[in-house]
Length: 114
Length: 112
Image (cartoon, rainbow over all chains, first blue to last red; front, side):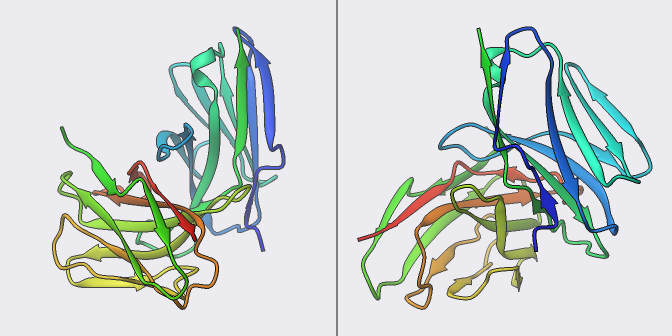
């Protein structure tokens, strides 16, 4: 039972264009969502997050959108840069836990071509 | 430099052998976590600890054990009961905002 799904295993984008990574969830108790970025042979690093009381959060080139009714969130990267090439994981938290339990999606490999 | 370290980078396990993965942090974080990553899958929680001398099972704790004797350290033992141990193991820690977790570089465990 995969509660957080990233249905696109990979995404290829030209430098300077927009990258849109998508994530769907099934558990309506999730109330906090995060995106992590991971380079090969390294641990993930936190990128951006959004609370369920918001529908948008922006940090520089990165914007996360949350559509609660559709149980869908997306990460927009504008403009995309070659250094953004990595695996992006979305994660969700909540459901009555307080210890920081994160449920991760499978990840999407983003490749930004120069 | 503040951070979280894991050692070794690669670890080989023989059949029937227990192996221990190290995780150390100097971020003064109370909470620490162990995840496992398999190809094409997201990270899955093995064990977590919110405070020294306390730890709880995550979603896939069978075949693993942990200890939390010091705030800085949270070692994970992969026991012989874990029948499919080959994976990338990630340790994380968190401070006040437990969802914002800081990850170590990971240990890749391979079975000989």
